[in-house]
Structures are given as C-alpha cells and as structure tokens.
Image (cartoon, rainbow, N blue to C red; front, side, top):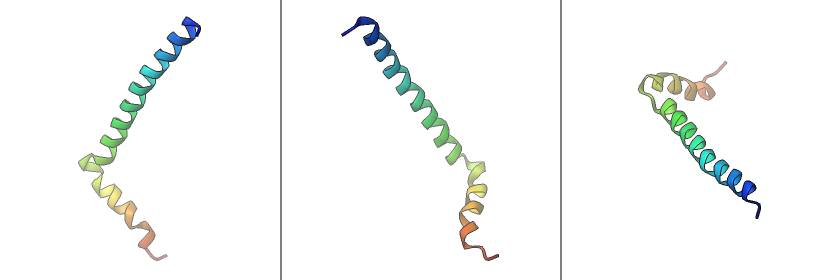
Length: 51
C-alpha cells in the first residue's frame, strides 16, 4: 500500500472520529440543556393541538 495513502487514511480516520465525537457532544449538550426544556416541551405538544 502506498505510504502517502496510508498516512492520509490514518489522518482522516483519527480526526474524523474526533470531529464527529465533538459534534455529537455539542448536539447532546444542546438537546439536554436545562433552559431548552420549555422549548422542546412546547414542540412536543404541537401534534396534539387542534387548529
């Protein structure tokens, strides 16, 4: 296998994992942030509201 390809593949795997882990943590923090509870509760009731 080409050493350049292997180096690029290792770089992409390592930093891709770090990138997606950070994005996941940010989305999780956004969804579970206490001040967002009211907003999400209101959004959850939208299908039950009558027009």
